[in-house]
Image (cartoon, rainbow, N blue to C red; front, side, top):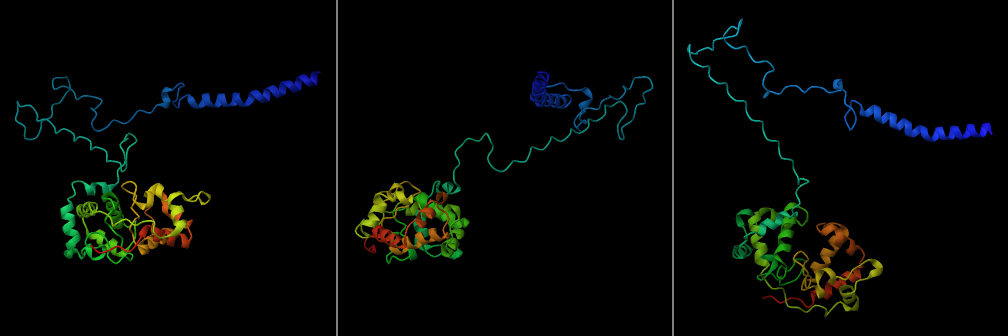
Length: 309
C-alpha cells in the first residue's frame, strides 16, 4: 500500500513539474524585460538626447555671481545677440515601394492608363501610316485595311477584338511578357499614348462575317459547347462565348481567326513560348487537347477564308 501511494505521488509530481517549470521561466523572463510583468528600473536604458533636444543645464545668467559674460564677435555692446539658426527639419521617410497594408483600393493594370482619353482617329492614322522615324511599318501591311487579314496566315484579325484586350497584348509585347520578335519591336517603338490610340481604333471595327461551326465536325462542336469533364476541359464557350463570339473585354473573340493563327497560338501555349495567359489556364487546357482536336477547333472557329474588304 505504501509503495502504491508513493507511486501515485511521483506520478502527480511528474504531471505538475512541466507547468511549474514553464510558469517560473515565464515569470523570470517577464521581470525586467517588458511584457505584462514588473520592470526593474535598472533594466531601462535612458535614450541619448537628440540634436533637437535642449541641453540639460542652461547657461548661467549674465547677472549671476561668478558668471563671465562672453562677447559675440562683431556684436555691438548693448545689443542683443543674434538668434542662432534653427535646426533643419528632419527629412521625411523615403517611400516604401509597393502597396501599404491600409491600401484597400482595387489593383489596376498599368495598360489601363494607355486607354485614358485615347483618340481612335489618331490610332487610325498610325495604323495606316506607321511610325517611319522609329522603324515601325503600317499596321495595315499585316493586319489588313479594316483589321481583317486578307490572306489569313499567322497574322491575327484585329477587328472584332476589344480595345482592352488589344492594349493588354501590346503592353505585354512591349514588356516582353508575350514574345514575338516583330511585335516586340513594334510595341517598344510606340509610346503608351500611341498604344492606347491604336487599341482604341481597332476596338471600333466590326469583326469578319460569321460562318462559325460550318467546319470542324462534332468533336469541335462538343468541345465548344460541352467541353470534356473527364479531362478537366471546360466548354470553350464558357470563356470565349458561344461559337467563339467573345465574352468580356479581356477574353478574345475566336470567331473568324484563321486556322493558321489559331493553331500557331495553341501550340505556343502548349510548348510554353506564350505565357501571358491568366494564371496559365490556356497553357493547361491546350496540353490536354490532341493535335487533331486543335485542328478541328481551328477549322470550327475560322469558317471560310475571309474576303478582303
